[in-house]
Image 1: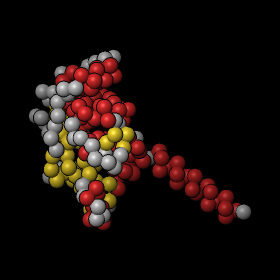
Image 2: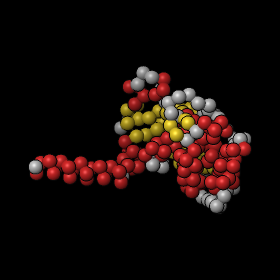
Image 3: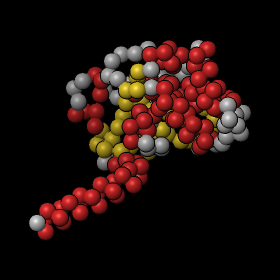
Image 4: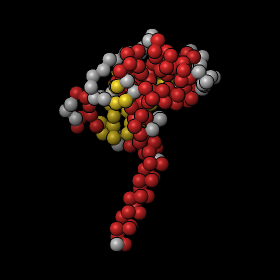
Length: 187
């Protein structure tokens, strides 16, 4: 009985530590390397414009970190994950509401760029969807999958145009694990 209680206690402690430090653990274990970029879209759909404006009207004079957090929240509220093929254009995703990593990144980048313009930060910052490779402790995980679905993984880099400072986010991981920033290997 004592062994069972100890195993239960250790499991509880490890689970609690894992949950509390999941962002740090994820950034330590998983790194992203950009191998290309995807197209960036502008907001042209009236429904998407209405959604973004209604969800961000009270948020004014945001700094870059607040824009990123709001963009992640709006993306998470709008999309749900599917492995099915969808349109890349975020203006169409506002209707379908289903997506996979490519479309999550596209929707988030479009949302983020819209919020950057709205908060007068677009001259300094730009969000770009990236095609990436994931590395677990330095090993490329994509080589272990034969499916074309796992050949790469998309994320977004928000970069300062003059200083080169950047923030990398994976909106898909944020939606499921609530991890905001990721570790991005700059080339």
